[in-house]
Length: 293
Image (cartoon, rainbow, N blue to C red; front, top):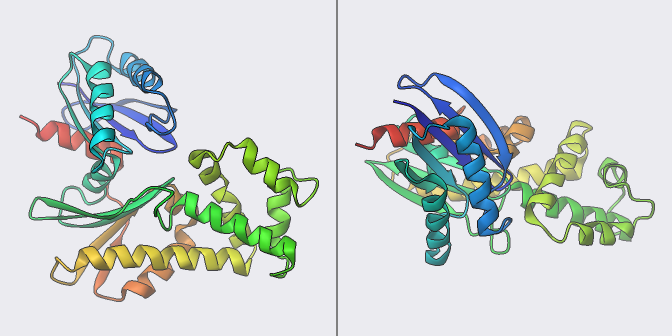
């Protein structure tokens, strides 16, 4: 039997084909299929194109986790319709991108996973029951996410331009990386991004460069990010007997875990064991579809 695991996040979609033993045959990266970033037809076309590359004979079972597949009934129906059209006649299982990330990171064991990519959410698995905290989207929450970090960073830049804050390396880096001739060009620069959450989140890497140069504001943003993460983790931990195992996943950690994890551990204390993710989200999707009888 062949399997395909799909991680459809807010920035990109990763697809991986596996055999019965979890051996990887092929993996591909495609654009995001987040319903807030693409039309329904674009999502269908992207998923179909990837599936055709990995499984032209239509024999695989598919496990998929998609950003946006949460508690909103309308969004769930849209995403279910997309998947029905994209994957038939294959057998598939649909979960949120957070659920497959948790399955992979903890290898199916009980614990908590904090996920910080374009958006952010925390999930807990205990006795086969999944609970969540956070994940309200960029307009209502997503604290600690790449989008949240980028917005904080850009706000610092504006305060530095005003003179409310002293200009630091962060100011210089934003001007350089955003190709600003004039400080106030930041307004037109953001307008050209059409306030797209994925594109704005993509600017968070600048904060990482500034942090490496010891910029105090960049480091403070990471400290605040860790503090926000600690709050959702502690809320979910109320259902556990301490100590509790915590893992992490997402682009924020890929770029800044050396800054965020020490802050996070200090906020959580020694009753929380932070571990590196055991497997990838797409492997988590593979595990979930393989469990389906």
